[in-house]
Length: 523
Image (cartoon, one colour):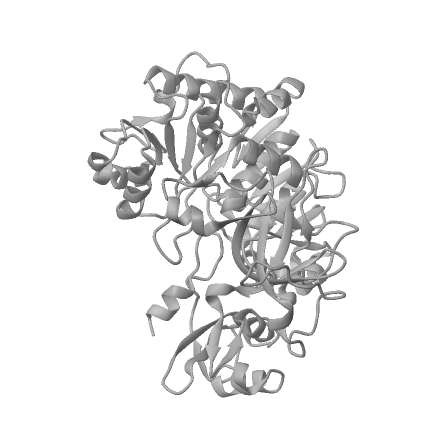
């Protein structure tokens, strides 16, 4: 029995008085947090919600999220995390598809739940941050007693997050107790010396997303460190908190680190308390990585993963780091590890390059790249009630079940992997393949570019052509023609953006990924 909360129970027993959650001026010790999680579990049980039942958590990063998450698992239930920015229509799909019986919602969002509750199986709505008609406040919901941990099997589902839905209807991802437990333990060993009880982790990543939930929140609770939730990303708030509270570990997405290095008062900050900083969620531009390290004197490591892999599959670490790489496959407890390889359309292994990163401009990418596929203890059980999607997502080969990531990669003889781009993002212009990430990396080198995204747009002669959307720096004076020429000076002619549009901001998901489908839809 590997119910994830049994590990946390051991932490509570060994450090009951240590700070577990620090939010604004409130601090919960491990014993206090654990008691509240037990009261939440008992409250579910009192209402007939237990093993195998789903509970929606529709909250930003707040202590109540942590309590509801572990309380649901403690009761044997399945957590369905939901983006607090979603509206009624969006959560209606998640609640209806999952069959959730209860929802814990921010008070301001309760009306969204009530708008769709009649079309779902939801029996209980719990409100955080205010008293709302037809909902029970969080404090009133908690039971007086605590429920013991309900046993669950390794392959029982623990969490059912939904894919971001940037390209279509979100799919429910079935992550088991073993998936989450393994990832939490393996990822906590990535920093030098592993996560420590003395570590203070800044919770900038949203908890509804598997990256923030599994890596940061679970990592803190597993190790006995303190978790500092941040409900909404703001560079000033986070940098102040790191400096004032001497926080030691930060996980983020590239957009966050880009905001930090472009902060108007960045030179005044000292973030030397940070001992480990990691970027994931999307590709990290080299310019952002190097500028961050120059400003703050701490190495910024890049990792890789997906919702379907709980999420981490690859990581750079001290002594095994290659800039521009997503790192090597993750090692776990004992002899367990992630297996990964790069395959072509026939599922044949693509040969490795001698050492990366390579000069992608000079290389024949068609010869050395393929799709990254992975296998391991962290790979999902499958998509919820979507047999066709499951058939497309997996390939059985050599007795191993491989998951298709959809990312174009190459790998080298030292075991490092390099993501070129998403398959679906590739632009085919005049018969040539263009990977947007390569153009975006170059654009970030321009002194007048604060942010950039490259997409393919329809073109009568070429089929598609390259277009760049640029967020300029405050004092920028470059014109679209200047940007085009800058790219032409470095890239092959067919790769340079023939169209350049300046914009105030790029549409992004809460986890920092550019929603390229929105940019295309506006064309």
